Image (cartoon, rainbow, N blue to C red):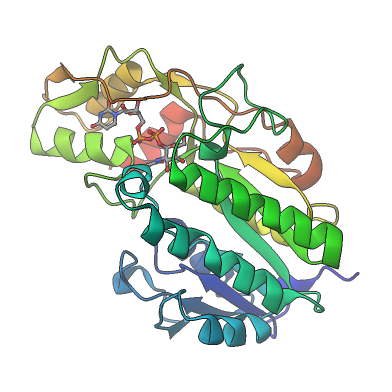
Length: 309
Ligand code: UD2
């Protein structure tokens, strides 16, 4: 099957959730080589993230007719629209389910019988509490939140639609993504929260002893993984980790953010988060093998690029 789809300006690319943090960076990387349509209701996505050359379909993903029509027009689909908060999924599982699970079925059904590729934003949350690290794709999957279960089911639907109906679906399992346009807020990533605290001169709040680790991946590397997944011959049918393969403690992270922002903020320790995962780091061998993916940013360079301006 020809896979030159990203090199032709006639290619129709649909980015569902394309006004959001990660989706808008994917859109920016494609506008010169394709016709990019963003499907987003701007509930958490922002219009200022939209490149002037993209077209916007302003609607909810909980509108199956509109979503089906948009997918049917596309040669390539990236699906990143989601209710992204683990905590909110615990507080309100039904809204989370309807947002994170029903639309992927609509999208995969609409792609059935075509050669449209679907690249889905899955998550490390599907693995639950790690039994060993680094976490490879065969690691047991015991999600401990509705969010994790929704991502796991959607990820498995991608594989099943590939196996049963030859749909070219790929799931990318993101670890902790950071970078420009990530908004600081109660449900946001720790780096964007530390950044705001450091810039304001407020205390940097490390939850617990700060010995917990994460694998932080820069959004530019996540874009790279998406573009590779859109074209790699053997990617469909796979769920593939996207991280860096290295981990850092949250305490070290707090110190790195303080340094990169030249901040005098004090680092304080607050109550640990209930159910917090102690250690998380990806095995990225499959991404290297199937996609030719190689992260460009290790964490200290990435923080410097993001914060040191
Ligand atoms: C990430 C994802 C989540 C899910 C999960 C899977 C983000 C934003 N969330 O959750 O969607 O995929 O991984 O396991 O990427 N922390 C502090 N101080 C703060 C805020 C956080 O110390 O002010 C700590 C927190 O206790 C945790 C670590 O930083 O140990 C990372 O927290 P997070 O919310 O950025 O991401 P995580 O790994 O819980």
